Length: 384
View 1 (tube, helix red, strand yellow):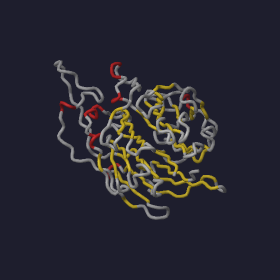
View 2: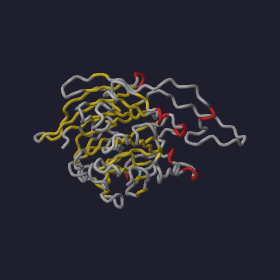
View 3: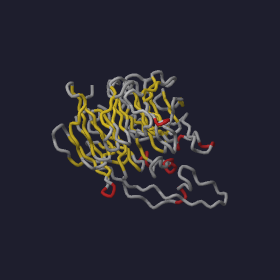
View 4: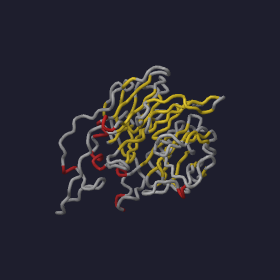
């Protein structure tokens, strides 16, 4: 089982370790005082990565090649020079095209800046691709490294898609790629989720892309555009490693599941809510996944002020809600997109909240134990 946890927080990277005598304990702290937006553990070579968002000082990426050796700075994704804006291709309202020639005046929205604001997701390439890494960013660029982070290249086939002009921010002012799933059976098959820009897939390693959000519904859009795949807001995308045809999305409009590798999606209903940000997929059981429900839209707090984790084991036909070990009402812990993780066994989970709570379950999410209620706001949790 995975006995190490990476916790990316607003005030640094915490590394936890589990042993039979002490249980879970803090092993070390890195980048103290600095916001860690994303972490990655590469099982192919043992390297760890930490992405920092330093605001005025920019985005930084660090790598530790092996346990006990110092961290070293890596290159960060860099956007190419931005061309002059073409007002005819910008939207008057983000996500809604300029009307046809009707005589109505339309004020073009400012173009999305070609400048790295945050590394929002990182994943390794396949086992047959040593050194390959993928990074999703704000403002919506997907980058690939073939040398373990020493250099990065923007994937232009996705960036240059004309549909990208309609992407817009979901929570942030600009769109962002927060989820990357590399098919364990085919490294050239990569699926990404964009807030707000839908789900996109390539089957040739990034040369060609297709929007695959059929079945998703965006209740926040006008009726005629609610099923438009290009303006969907998936909050988080997860894939069953053992059965990669099974995919789950926690969407702004609810929970969606796909049984055909993300080509088509089915909307599911869960109680106490189908709204939330985080989802974790069981690594071997295609019908099992976990979610953390919240009150929708403006509130974004646990339903009735009570934190629970829901689990389905039948593909979303039914959901169980678990609260043992979690705080009772009033509790206003919100779980960010990357704040829920499951290990390779499917029995151990970790969950971190915006208010600094960290819980660990050794029972498939049925019972939880508080590690600390006093950590900095938690951006991401990840088993090594």
